[in-house]
Length: 437
Ligand code: HAM
Image (cartoon, rainbow, N blue to C red; front, side, top):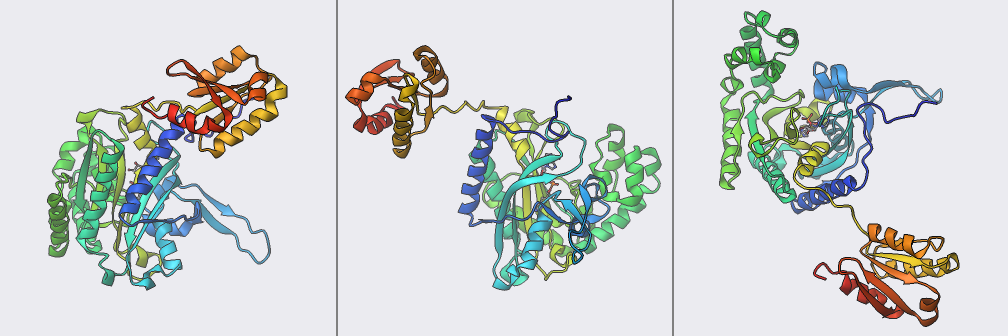
């Protein structure tokens, strides 16, 4: 019989790597909560229309990467429905914001999420079909100040704080403005016009995009196309005064706290809902290349018209999503996560000592220690070898120890042995296992 494997583009995350995932998530929660964000959990699948109306019908995500199926009704009262595994979570958060009338509080909502997303992309290093995002959204009615450039700058400052706290050695912030939706329409028309005479000399993707979605031409990485792209009009020249002033205010706030950035006029991003600020944090090639071609650690931007596009009230917002898989790759390149050891291994000698060993393990765990429980089936030598691999110390539980209540403890780092009465075991082990000992 053939062996069943995880589906292409999906992965199992195993210990000790999961320790790193947990550390990243704990750091994200700690940092985000300091900025007064709260967690939101939305469903993993949604009505397909949610994504076509927000991310955009013409985007790669909606046109070819979504996992969509026709959900069969189970009862006559139910209708068949087209459902989609979420390819991203901004649309879901905005849907929840509208559905639960969060705007009626009159306050800005600051929501973060951690979870899997699904896109049928060509798998490669740093690109998977099930991947994890840590994201956050700041949105609310305009009267609450949700359009303010200060919100953009604060989100960017928080991201810099998060990456620095995690110890990501080198990142670069790329920043741009795609203007209001009118600015964008104007730019797309200008771009289409400029592409008409030159597109025939470009790669196949560009030729197709020049007609269907000209903004995507700016993402092209084909070397021969680069001189042509460099000569295309820039989005900045299509922005109106208000969009330029908004961008300048974001930059001024970043300058005030010493956050460096690079304006990248080609950063228009692959989702249709963006207005004004767009950004990506990429791995800085001068600091190492853990990620290779997929070097965007995270991306985001402002989406002032998204709520209306899916039937909600005006709720300008800004947010981001961090590719957690990529963050893990970047961190693994610099440090190896050590396998985690238990504090104590309880080694019963002879299987008649097993019940007493379970009771002792319970006592130690109640005292706050992490315990690996051995088995009296194993001989002393095997128990000690296993203990040395799995824990930082071992407590031996034989006939004498049980009778006297004085236990033999070995501390592996120093090789020292101790005799400790059962009632003092928790506190003596705690002292023995403090990092300086
Ligand atoms: P996005 O740029 O499509 O934006 O994705 C954000 C990040 O998710 C990327 O920078 C990358 O690190 C990671 N990512 C995307 N696709 C994959 C993949 N196939 N495998 C591994 N990692 C991947 C969004 O999703 C927007 N919802 C971000 C946002 C939030 N904008 C405003 N609010």
